[in-house]
Image (cartoon, rainbow, N blue to C red):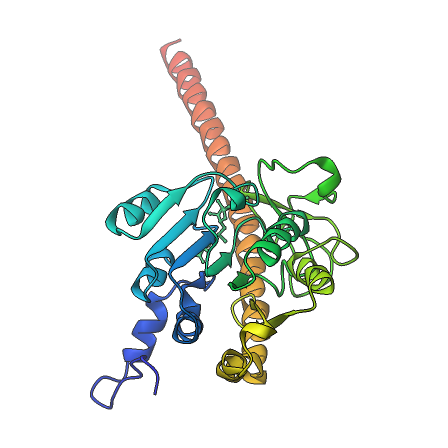
Length: 314
Ligand SMILES: C[S@@+](CC[C@H](N)C(=O)[O-])C[C@H]1O[C@@H](n2cnc3c(N)ncnc32)[C@H](O)[C@@H]1O
């Protein structure tokens, strides 16, 4: 059984109540809590380095599961993150960006990579971790669409031009292979590579290249909520306990089908919102035209009244 309340005959709306209170787009790694529980149950995890914190929704989970030190790395921490960090003894805020920050922190038992989702950054993060933290588990987000095969750059980006593909403000959609202003757009927060695929493009491509250089590491993929990747050395899982524990998630065609359906529906919603905003602009224009015409009618009416008054008095 799950933790979800699906209601009863006396309370038939419990499920829909929960559904409407959830965000329209699930995107936080907090939804992977049960995967983290499996990892914590099989590994001694004391130190966590979390790259990319955003709201701080996940940071507390690592402490709850037993970590004594959680380094929350985000160069642009929100007020909410600062408050979350202050409220937990185990959490430490670090504002130096990744990958530069990695050698400045203690070697961790768990790295969670969810910062800048592009090849250049993820390549450097993995190169450092796979070399210096052989006992660690690495959990990473966004290994599937839209950033698995297409770079995202948080703006303004500190990356050298040679590390960036030509970028666009438009975003990807499921409904065709081009970028579109009606797609998954960054609205100033990020830009995306104009083209998907090819070399040195996207998070999953960076993982594949890291694995080619480090074949002693295994990669597992949970095909849900933009894709969660898990990396660990096979010689640190000799009884295959972690691999077996993850298998219900990593081998689930059901999860993969739900994810494809989710991204299709979500990008359809984005497209409809874009079209509705266009319609709203059209209606605004219409309202402005009507208001201008009304002002002109009022002016002409006043002129007419003045002319009548002059005629009557003459
Ligand atoms: C997708 S959000 C993280 C979401 C969070 N992990 C969660 O699951 O709720 C990405 C975050 O990465 C941060 N970020 C961007 N570039 C970064 C970098 N080079 N190093 C660390 N964090 C970065 C952004 O400020 C943003 O808050």
